Image (cartoon, rainbow, N blue to C red):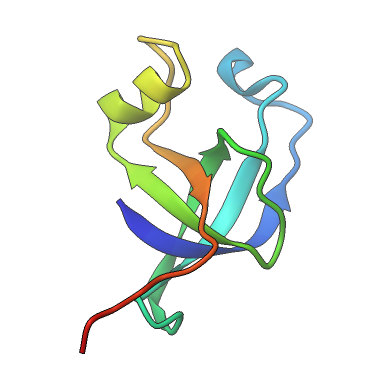
Length: 90
């Protein structure tokens, strides 16, 4: 799992049937201080996250399929939570 910021949403007219009715979010990876840590990921939304929100992303296929309750879905990454705060010991 890692932190991300939702930067946008992907809209498609033709896709795999698994994605019908599901939102796909473009998320930038961030560190625990909210700074970009490099790269981005496209993840299916399991929560109602929107652009600009800090989120928790599960990036592991079997876990993502379990969260979405579909054992054969073509998915690897899923947004599993909206993060209110991050506390880091220094």
